[in-house]
Image: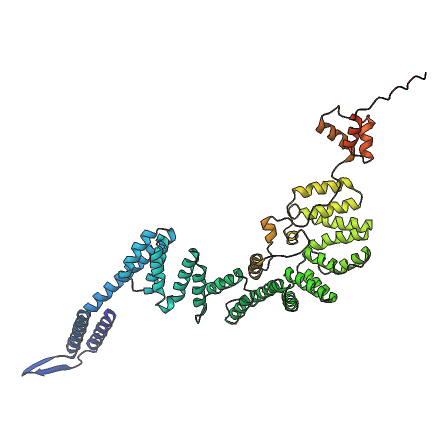
Length: 507
């Protein structure tokens, strides 16, 4: 408005100045109510400009005065809004700091000051939760259900509250309601998926995966991994009752995700029962190419039982060639060389495994394989050194997937649930038996544990029954070398000898 007045005044000044510079521009006369006013044209223009300026000012003043109530209302609303924002900010900061009481005080203030109903209700629920008031928390989340845009948030809060109280049935019910919304949240799917897995409901979990993929809640790769692991779990569950369906599940799972080792193991086992050794071999080879696992080569080895060691070694070489750079392939190379008995093959395989063994990657099984290789080369000192290192090395988690009877992935529903969740989310295998510390197949080799020439000294030191033998004393030393038990030789030495009776005199 001020800019408009200034422009009008400037125009008036310019016109007046122009008229004045032109000289005598004429006379202006005004007759009004028997009054006559005569003046110059320049003066008339100036008077008109001033009057117009005053009229505009008066009009704007009148408008400003008439709009004063609206301006005052807007100012009060702005002040209230600013105070409401400050209260909400302090409330959320109090929740973040864990001060539930302060958060609830700010939430009460926000009810009067803030017009954003959604934020106020969220703050009220979070403040009640932070203060530990279960009743108020439930009431606050329940109130959210009446607001369409807050319904999912309210259902999630109630679900978490039910879960924290151990009411799994109610939690699943709320998650089901949230999942049935037009735009379901990811937490609803995860809650239902975990509930199905925990209950061992593999078929229902498969159907849930299909629906989530259709609704674009999960990615296709997550869906594939979940389907493969679920089908493998289903095959393991019905293997004893319905081999045909179990075989179909296992083969489809192994084809869908070859790196999921349990599926390949179950599929190969069922294919062997169906006398389909060629397909079982293909399944294990594809799984080895994707992700080598000790259970795979053990199953591959046992596919054929009527073969010579050399023939088995040639067959295992085909498996190794599928993924030659993997550490499991190097371990299997040593196993293959031990079957052939060719010294140079054993030397090369052991050397390759030693070069691949760092302190971080060294395990009991790796040390055991190297010890067996050294033993086959008649290097007993090195073999015992590797066996000693094995006692200090960490166990191999993947070896724990094979139980003491040689069965791989013989897990219950709870373990399968853990396997499915981890593989679907991270594409990695967990090892439940390793985490529980259960014993499986032995990792250490059965090697002679004593150094023969030192045994006489150790035995004497332990028993302290006589002087410690010295190298010049051939007694116990020779007995140890010949393989006799020193306890037996000492028992013979300490056994009292009966004196022979003197012959009677002949009369």
